[in-house]
Amino acid sequence: MKEESKLNIELQDVSLDRMFEQYEQKFKALADKKRLQIMNLLTKNGSMCVCDLSPLIDMAQSKLSYHLKILLDANLIKKETKGTWSYYELNQEELNNLLSHELCCIFKPTHC
Image (cartoon, rainbow, N blue to C red; front, side, top):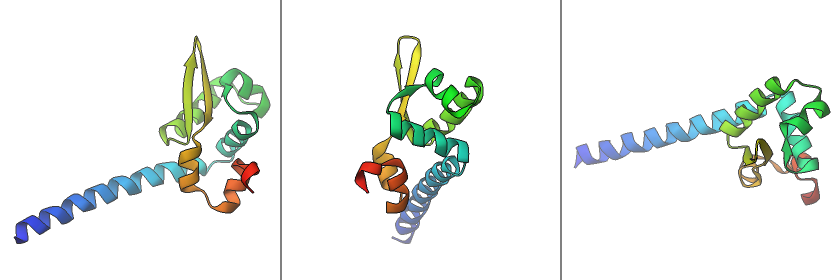
């Protein structure tokens, strides 16, 4: 019996560890001014491709793609490919789970 409960505790700790890693990744992605600007532009304009975002934040497409990849890996944005272009939009469900009411007003102004 003791072995079984020890096994359950170890499994639970692993899943908690993974969950903490996922949250760490999300908050690290949010902890960058440029990425917050990107997310704010996606809030205002909806789905956008890199070619449309780049001039709005005065950043080379390669650098912008780097930031988008971080946001995408953290599941904070979604990507849809249409032909040769990739379009990005906020993952509202994920943001709803993460953000306080104050920050939600920045990314979801219609809900304030």
